[in-house]
Image (tube, rainbow, N blue to C red; front, side, top):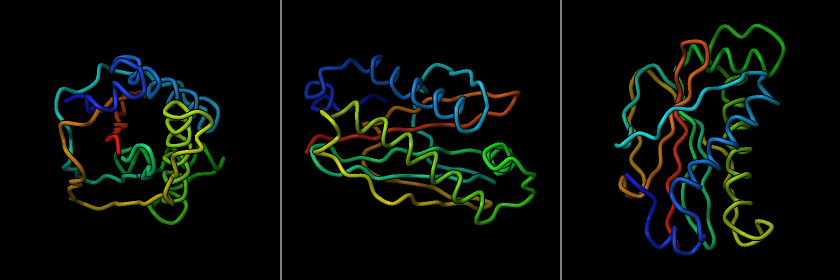
Length: 167
């Protein structure tokens, strides 16, 4: 699993540098908005597209580059994220959790947008999309043009994935 070769050439960044940007963005968003200090793990060798009792927040990128940035986490951890963001206990997956995961995906997408282009003017972000359920799969774009970084927080694990293609 790797970033598309045309993307790496166009952005003048190695895959390790792009992974570093995803890690930095995720750690910064979680430290400032969620009050959680995360531990990043090594990027996964294979894409993950099947989820159980999870919630995924995604934003699409369109323009010079197209792609999807997504955060995938267990429902229980999504409720903890939302509780931290809102400063109140959240005990069920609902509108608050959807909004929180969508906003995190949007912030991460904005960070990646700025890395990929000067001032972000040639890339647009979609409105966040949320998928949740007992069991679901997400298949979008090529699985080989993807970077997936796992993060841990107090024994909980979630994933941030970035799929990119140069138009």
